[in-house]
Image 1 (cartoon, one colour):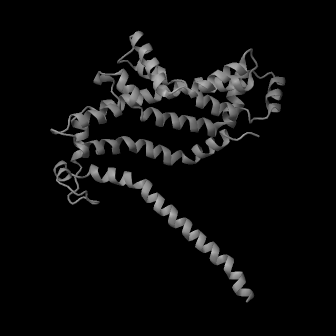
Image 2 (tube, rainbow, N blue to C red):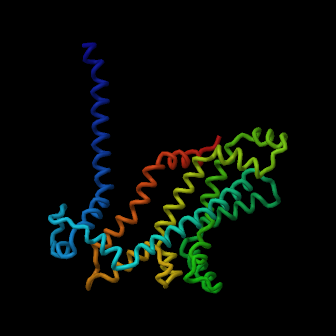
Image 3 (cartoon, rainbow, N blue to C red):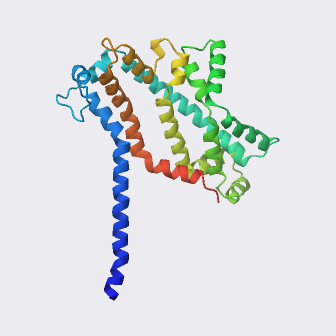
Length: 286
């Protein structure tokens, strides 16, 4: 009897674990299915795809012609270069602004600090559509449409990232700052030598999230550019759609999406642990 009683908890635990794994497996299939369908469609020929009245979950005659079409039907290589420049420059400027702003709000004392930060947070409540309209009018009035400056400037500051890093900076003990000041360390040197190394996970998280945001940018580039010399990869997908062979070339679009998604997938897989660590640290005080 005692052995049976002892075995019951293990049976319950095993059943609970089995149920958890089954649920997670089903959920993983649901989440990953769109990626599978995207990859599958990208290797189907244009004719076979259009002849499928009932979609097939496999490719009878796989082909990589769609990947060639994605690069030849539009100047996708040029769009990749534009996107790379846009992403690197925007992320670099944003990171400098975010680090300096977060440091000022977290550690420096100046008149109107709390009011200014409250106004900063209030900006998060303004609908994105209103900001886009304002930015579009401003960039147009400044004559910056179809320029890298017009693409980059509206994206170099983020209230959310400043708030996230500020919360992380404030977790560093005040005694460290006081000790550094006693040793004659300047605020800028304290930021570079102490705060940034200690808050590296959050900074890396912000960096990666901004790269993903820039790489996936769609609405703003479509608004501010109508010259193909400044198109990003998001514009390229739309152009493939519009320049299909008499109709939408879905397989070529999916091939382009696969190519565009690979850098982000690799980036996330390489740094996903730092992203989780940075977000958890940024949202926890004390």
